[in-house]
Image: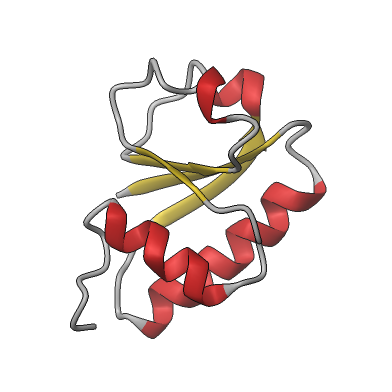
Length: 93
């Protein structure tokens, strides 16, 4: 499974989100490749899931994979909720 974490420039905040997504996935025993990138690159990338903020979600709605929103990139509970919404983490985990 390939997950993209996306911010405007693909530098700081998407990297922070990537590290926190990896941490949540590890806690739930889920293996995935997580990459961070800017919104322009993500618009043409191939992934199973994209995680971004509410400001950028409209730029990515055309993708064939689910796009979920996380606004607080360091809030593990919000990340878990987004992964649950995408069906990656189940509610019982």
